[in-house]
View 1: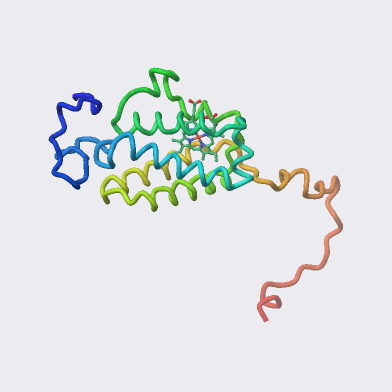
View 2: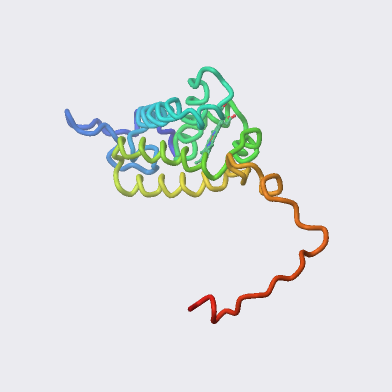
Length: 178
Ligand code: HEM
């Protein structure tokens, strides 16, 4: 495949038309290339920055470098330049997330901001569906911590009795239903 960065493969679009290639081959090209990913990740990180519980998960004061890493990864994953692997090595995304407590609630926050960013981008339907399906699947895969803010069950529940409690007369099922 020719590199999407090669301007020779793009036909000159008519004035005012979408500058995407006439025959996009990848999702990267279908949604508008580099600029589209710059905007998508900027919108996503605006959401993260304004969401304290999720923001707290990101170790750096400046979200800019994290935004660049996500953009490079997504560009590569969706068929664009391979800058992510060239600068960061093999993605191994799940491993790269083990230091952060990705709970189901945090995953939902992450997905909420990505979905909102996708809504605002308004990508062509086919690419939009494929990207959303990927985000949904990948975000679920990144969950590595099951207990949310609540303490683990064994800390909050009373310990089980050492000896069984004396048996109390049992209500019959019929009686309960009456
Ligand atoms: C589609 C799902 C996801 C993708 C594609 C993704 C992608 C990435 C990438 C590429 C990085 C940078 C890795 C590196 O090069 O070091 C990263 C970092 C990170 N991700 Fe995710 N992620 C996803 C889901 C999540 C979720 C669900 C959470 C938490 C709720 C999360 C939290 C983080 C955090 C805290 C970092 C560290 C920030 C940094 O320094 O780069 N990610 N993620």
